[in-house]
Length: 365
Image (cartoon, rainbow, N blue to C red):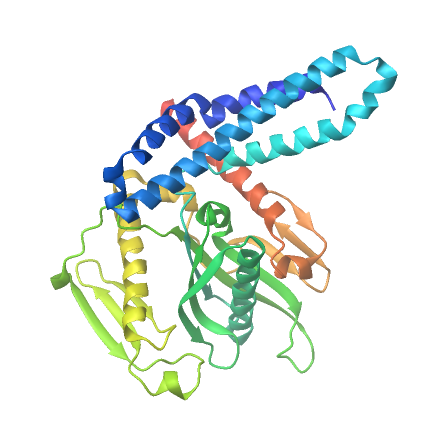
């Protein structure tokens, strides 16, 4: 492990992370936090506090790592060659911290820090696809739990025979959208079918959509007269208390035709709040796409949920998972389906970063 190489990589990251810009922004935010007037608006104050904490963590990590590498370099020069191996643990720790900082650069795209709204729908494959969609829902729920994120169900529609026909959840946690963004696309499952008496091999598809949850600090104008709000009986699991009350809510935004449904809770008020959150994000997404086409760059091409469109294949009878964008393969599909996704996600973020850079360079030309 080359100390000079680590120092060079750290200096390169200084530019990618825009450490001087983050230091200036942090100074500005700390000044605002000292202003008593800010605390008269608790929501705004929390937002400023969260942003300051995030910037402070990055800046402090960079400064600490820079100091550590400078100290290690001095010791390396002082130690005779036969004693330098004693510095190996410190070098490995510095390399680990550097890798964490590198990951920060992969999460530097717009809205990466926000919560994520994740939608799963089965594609080609009938009952098999519905079951596969439910497996994906479990996979992302388990991934969220591993990261210490919260998960809130917005809508869940059971499949006709098994699995789910539709699911939408909000994953709440720092960088939830950033981490889940590369998961958007078509996922393919190959396995001996548990629904086939002959145990034949079946292929199923499901589509995953990921978008950031936008809050009230993002200006999205929703006029009451542009909404049609319907209530109806929930169709999801939950027993008689759910199924015999008009707690489900459907909101239609008349100018765009966007429809959002929430039937996750027994409370009509809560379901309406969840549906409005999703509608706000969908309208923001639409406006963002119109003005900047940035969403296309972040989410990639929208492709049909069928053969040839998949971003990743999960082949259970041959015990492997392959990401078709990055070439990364795993040979423990059960662990992947249990939410062990970070290496696949970081590889996906590297791939997306490369695509963003190519687009930016093409626009510059």
